[in-house]
Image 1 (tube, one colour):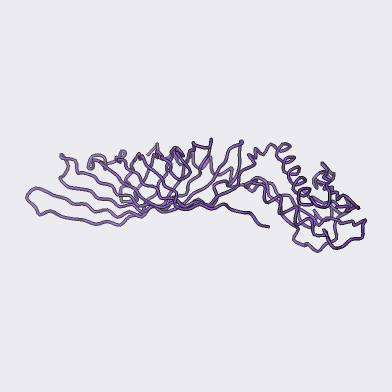
Image 2 (spheres, rainbow, N blue to C red):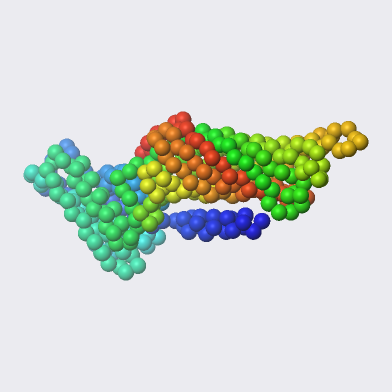
Length: 342
């Protein structure tokens, strides 16, 4: 019981800090100046293209770029305009600026306004020829993200997209009761688990330069127990249906750690053979909860191996606490790269 409490405490301490919303930066419409008077290529909505490039750079949950709620406002041209927009939008940081199109070149300048200090803390420049407009927009987007990463020590890894994944884990192990009267009645033996795991995004957020992500799914586990000879003769069959939520830490390309919590529905079948009496079978429906911590070796893109330590509690009249270590293999069934949209 003490061990379960410690695991749950560690889980809460790890999860709570990352429930906090990340830094949000607003993007205002950009002033467009065409000195050539050639309106065939009108870039007055360039701020949307800048946002698209910013969203294409993986920043997880620690850095978010968003458009203004009122996208029809006139582009800010001064710090007074920027402060007014920030006040109306309740924005801490605002990106605004201008694009100038000349005969042979196109130039962009984006300013970063800090509303709390009422000052421009950075300006980002890029220039290119007309044929490389997209390259110029991408260049200024990279400069913006790099500035936030270095200035606020966000630990963005960069260069990696996000993937949705569906896998099928299967494992074998054993289980044993922990303390209480159950330990005097039952001997835990083998356990087998199979299920499906869903990872909505394998690059949810970056912290300390490492990649974190969440997973969920459904698992079915079968456990076999034996009655202790000095207590009673019989068998204990337990089927656990589990819905886990896990936090994963990818320490490298091939190694990761995970920990999580779960709710469980448990079907228990107890076969009792008492002296001088007919054998009796009893069926129980119970609810339970669990916490686990483990390690995963990513052997290839499709196959990984893992070791899991599972602690569970069954909410019976006298709670049944148990520990169950597992060795398993996980096979990826489906994966697809996610593209962020604005």
